[in-house]
Amino acid sequence: MAKLNEKNIIKKILTQIPIILLFISVLNNFDFNYLNLKYFSFNFSYILIFYFSLKRNSSLGYSFIFIAGLFNDVVNGTPIGMSSLIFLLLCGVAAYLRAITLRKSLIKDWISFVLTILMINSLSFVIFNLFFNYEVSYISQMVNVVFTSLLYFIFSFLFNFIEGNFNVR
Amino acid sequence: METSRDDFVIAIRSSFLNKGTQQRFSLLGLIIFSILFLILGGINFKPINYLKIAIKEIVYRSTFIVSTPENFIKESYLKVQTHLNLYNINKKNELEVANLRAKDLLNEFIVLENKRLKKIVDDYLVESESTFAKVLSDKNSPFFKSIIVNKGSKHGINLGSIVMDNEYLVGKIVEVNFTSSRVLLLSDLNSKIPVILEPIGLLSILSGTGEDYGTIQYNKNESIVESDVIIYTSGIGDLFKAGIPVGKITINNSENEDQKIEFFSDFAQLKFVKILSFKKEEN
Image (cartoon, rainbow over the protein chains, first blue to last red):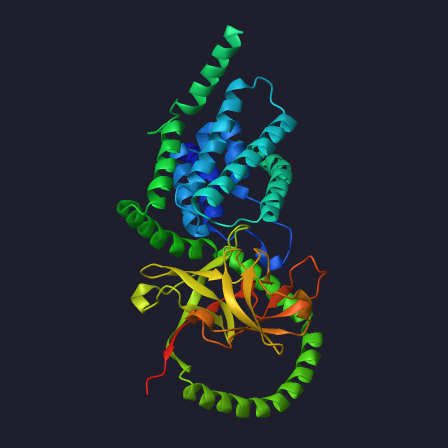
C-alpha cells in the first residue's frame, strides 16, 4: 500500500513537470548569452506550450500559462499581458489542431507550429510598434523564429522519449 | 458545405470555450483578460500598476533564485575559458600596463587642469550619490537588452540615474521598484545617448542595435570616423556627465553601413554595477 502511494506521488510530480519547466523557463536566464553566439536565440516557452497543449492538454492549465505569461512580461520588461496573450493564442491554435486532427504526424505539427509562431511574432511586432512605440529588431525576431522552429523537433523527440520511458501520461 | 462549416465551428468552440479539468476560466476568457491587461497597462490604470509592482517584487527575487543553477554553469564556463586564455592575456596585460603607467602621469596633469577649467565655466559636475548594486537577472531577451539590479527606491535610486561597470558606462535606470530596478543597457535598440568621438571631437548619438555592439547615428560625414576612435559621453542635454568612456570603433564598414561600436564593458558578464547621479558642485 505504501509502495503504491509512493508510486502515485512520483507520478503526480512527473505530471507536473511541464508546469515546473514552464515557470523555470520564464524565470530563468535561459538564453545562453554568455556563449556570445551572435545569431542564436530561441523561445523554449513556445515549444513547451505548443507541444503540451497539442499532446497532453491536461498537463498545462490555461491559468498557469496566463500567470507564466505575466511573469515573462515582468522579467523581459515587456508590457504586462503581452506574453500571456501570445502564450494563450499559441494554446488556442494547438487546441484547435488537436480538435481537428485524426492522425498525428510530427511534420504536420511542425508546420502548424512554424505558421503559428510566425503569426504570433508578427502580432507582437505590430503591438510593440503601433501601440507601445518599442523598436524591435527584425533580424532578432527572424533568428528567434528559425531556431525555435528548428529546436521544436529536438524537444519533441526529447519529450516523447521522456514520456515513453518514464510512463508520464 | 454546411457540415464542414459546422465542424469548424465545433472545433473552434471546443478549443476556445470549453474549460479543461480544474479550469476556472476558458481560453477565450483568459485571452480577453490578457487584452484587458494590455490596454489598461497602456493607459496607466492604477490597479494594474499596483499589480505590476507586486508581481515585479516577487518575480525579480524568484528569477535570481531560479537562475542559480544556470548561473553556476555560466560562471564555470567563463572560468574555464579564462584559464585557457591565461597565458595570452597575461602577455597582453604586461604590455598594456607598461603603456598605461607612462600615460597615467600625463593624465593626472590633464585631469587636474580640466577640473580647474570646468569650475571656471561652471560646468563641473560632482558625484552626488553612488550605490553598488548586485545584478539579479541579466535576461537578455532577443528583443530587449536590460538587467535587473537589487537596489530600488528604498535605497534612493532615481529614474534616469546612470549605471557603470567600473569606470565604463553600462546604461541608465528606466524602472524603479521598491527593492529593485531595471537598467536599460546601451546595446538595447531603444537606447540613444549623446556622445563625443575623440580625438576628432565629433558630436553624435550612440544608438543600441539589439546586438552586442552599438552604432553612431546622425553624423553628417561618415568618412571622418576612423578606427581607434574612443567614444565618451558628451554631457549634452544633461543626461550624462561628460567624459564617461563608452566604447571604441572597431570596424570601419562600407559607406552604406553604420559604424560598429564595441562597448568597453561586457554586458553578458555583469555581476555588480555602480549606480550614480551627478549634480553641479556648490560653491
